[in-house]
Image (cartoon, rainbow, N blue to C red; front, side, top):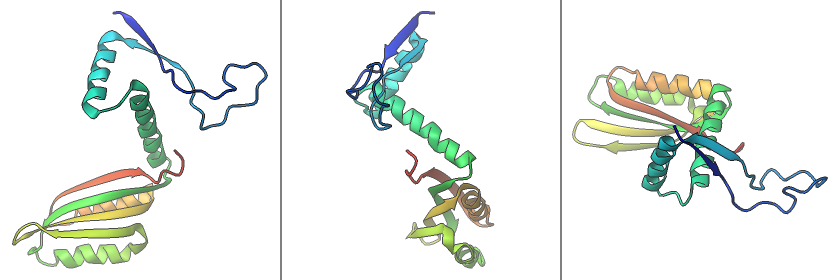
Length: 162
């Protein structure tokens, strides 16, 4: 396999590379090298093009951010996210059960969007914020409630540590 070396080369702070210079600010761009097989780089370039990135550096930064966000979840730090559920509102006591859960854990819920999809089905998107384990627990309870036909929990970061 052919080894391909790619250097991320963009704007650097003035102190970059100077011996004895002051430490770099954390928001200054840094250069580093990435080595990978050619086929992997070709596949990565196709993904970059499909997603509309202007360069590899932006794509790599997003991958790193995604990894850092996942670490936040593992460390049980504050996260935000959405719980999306589709349910039949005619299922006995389902609407009341879902509402009761939201009231019981109201400190975790920031906003709710409710849409009537047809005569029987509703979609709710609940914006949640709190400690990762607490938010995941209530999301699982909502999604696992009898009568919920489909549910999806999506977590992201508050952005404070990125």
